Image 1 (cartoon, one colour):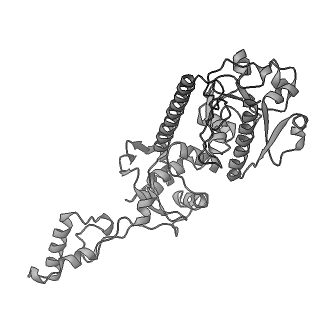
Image 2: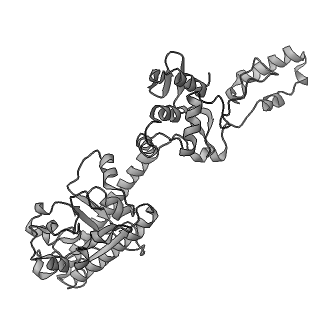
Image 3: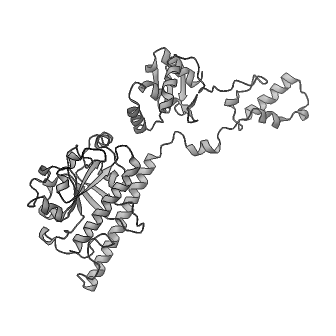
Length: 407
């Protein structure tokens, strides 16, 4: 029995619990077993044949919302059933309909050669096929003289293409997420090492020249860090302290940018809601996140690393000298116990950003409009616009850092 018919049979009989995955195959009780990657006869409206793994996961989870189903399937690395295919497929598997135009069952055995494997079982490299074909012709057609038999024509008659160029490029049942994660980590480590090497080289050069301020220093220059070691600067001086600069974000979930999703927004230019990130991270709350500007209008610009934190109370006095930006809630209590007189002083020494959805009520930004902060608007649904918003944050931040460094 083919995988699709077996799954339909078990679904109608209410025996889905008997379908168990064991290593790389699904076992249908003690009746059948199929490889997880085996294609079924059900073709999606997008043109591809669904695998038995995709259909088993769908029929066992068809009762949940489509968005949640897509997210869960993606997390487990399983291809999902598209929304247009959901109802027709469910109706067929549950027996509400007996057939569907989307079903393309395998071609039956060749009636000319009943002893040969079916067309879909044929593999050109199998020598048994050739032998069986010869025997079949001798028996059925009475050929006695093998010199009159065109064996190649017989073989071609039962050949079929197993894969074409398009199906090879689709890489079905392959998940390259781990490859992406590994390569990204390697690239980040390479950039970190190169940045440190450049910094060490400039520090050594400046010491050798005995120079304090000859153009090598200045945190906000094109190199993106302070090459001359200076004593830590106090807030009254207006400059940035020694070390990696800090960006503060609110710890409250009612704000758009938090410690959970700030990295994707600033590094990749993509806004992911905090609740989604919390589920993906399984609730693990990072104390500190490092972000870098990985996209720019200026492709030759060297990226700078920033620390992102959401616990101002944990900052030491010297840490405050490194704080360059803050994402604000729009509430005064966010700045309680900060080492400043008021929000006027705060936003003279630290650049502020307020993130909002573009169609939200302006009432939410009532306090913010009285502060010296930049309001950044993003769309609730148009994720392709996030990059422009993130780039605006980076442009404002870098301009502010340069002005502080040279003040």
